[in-house]
Image 1 (cartoon, rainbow, N blue to C red):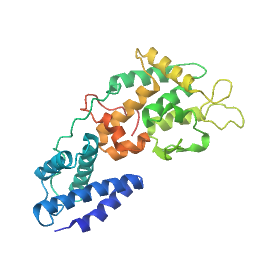
Image 2 (cartoon, one colour):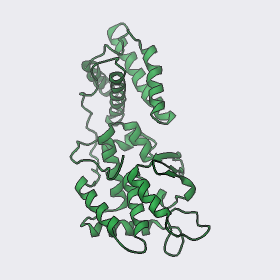
Image 3 (cartoon, one colour):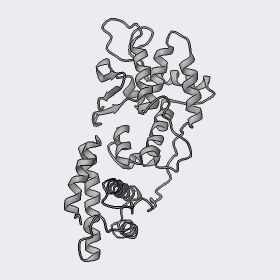
Image 4 (spheres, rainbow, N blue to C red):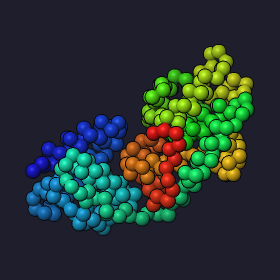
Length: 293
């Protein structure tokens, strides 16, 4: 039977192959390792990765809350780590169930629920924006799709330069350079984002202009300009939206589709998983992925 010393290096390799940052990988490993030590102490002997139960995970949750006084956000992060490990154990045949999956997360202080769009609203918004015919329609549609499909902040979007995109028909990576203490991150571009960006890049542009998105005067866009573009596209679809609405929509559906708090934290550019916990909500919409995966 596999021991934790056997399995944790395999789990680490799996996390790294998933493209997670080293700090995120280290956080997952620390959470799972701490649980393995605690459950062994309770049992008086090592409990293998294949042997711990949902009751063990539930008891550990109570221990973190009642004995260690951990915050709901910190406890939920640990539970997400154990769920992640459980999925890995299922995938590799170490276990035939994920004992952490059914353990409920703790409710924390009231958080403002992000305003997100439904699939129908996204479909209407995208369809009408793509059908527009104006001087800036192709640019505006690319902005819309990039916000929807990557969740970038509007402050990051206006700083994007041509050199930050690695793009082909079937591959795309967007590099977001960290601002302040935020780390650099690389975001995959799905088919919908790639198609919109390719069309935008095919448009005439001033010689020597390095920013990805330009105003009619050939200068970089302002935050206010992007806000107005998004609001205008939303109004045409009967929606009151902002770039933040599109970021929240991306994040909410990424969580729904993956259940991966570490991935969600990285994609959004947060330093701590706790910041992303507001997106862990009961799924009441269907996905945002319009036009490609």
